[in-house]
Image 1 (cartoon, helix red, strand yellow):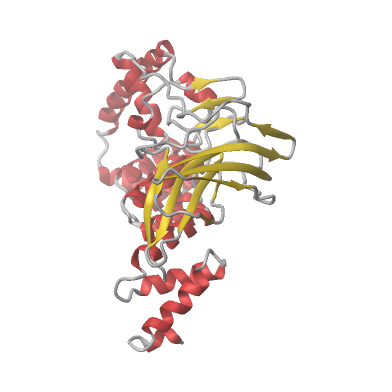
Image 2 (spheres, helix red, strand yellow):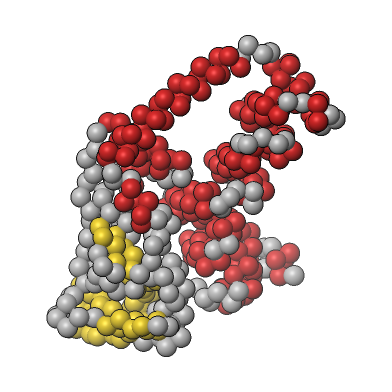
Length: 406
């Protein structure tokens, strides 16, 4: 396997340079990278693109201008006619072999994008520029606390949503920093545009914050009253529910299920909510499933996570948190764990990317059974050069580990 070294990188996530974006363009260049083969000296241009619109990108035309240390320049053009990039999905074109090896800079420009019902073309004389950033939100204490609480209830980190949303006629930039064109939900965090706008209304947030505090106070008072009943009575009442549901007052059964959920007995609590006729039972069952899924995610219990995820409605309530955790694992180089979460989400492309990156990071180290396992999975999808990598890896290690050859 050839050894590669990254000699240039530009991205929108904190690199020294940014590939930028032309407002309104349905295609975002997430990252630009040039990797050099340390054996041959050949350099390859690699790109990661995202469809940030609400429709499929059938094809596109992109121009890359490469400048070298010696003052030479090179222009490469990509024009895949059958890209078929689905909304909110990423795309990695085949690496482009460059003529030089001493890279000074790379700039990119999307020239055109073809979609089922329209085509986008760059404006003459325009150029990509950094993604616009909204102003930092300044809210009163109550409004800020309510906004943070609302985001946390959706399993979002408030620190990532500190800026105001930017609205334009056919594009907008989410509070999380992601641009979107011709769609109502952010292609990265899946929050709705109208919801984010509402989260900037200080008067409404303040009123909601006061209402939340009033409910919390009332709930605490009711909790004190309910606490007069002993735990034995509550559990006995709940157990008896299974044998004589028609004799049990629904409120008692409901409170028993709540007690079990608070104690972390999610299976019994969920079953209880599902069996009683109480106006809040269905909502409570969903809250129980969400809480159980969130707990499983925190404990990295993927089997339980899959079990409870299927019971959360809408599933986006937990999927956002799963994707954020997967992104965190990727940044921390916990690629196997990230792949497992992407598998739960059904995001095959992201799962394969994580597995492939793990293979690249570990391929030249000592024998690693996970490299074999992941390459076998990638080979089934014919992903990148995984089939060749697997054959070479087995050939390299079969004398020390004859079991892998079979």
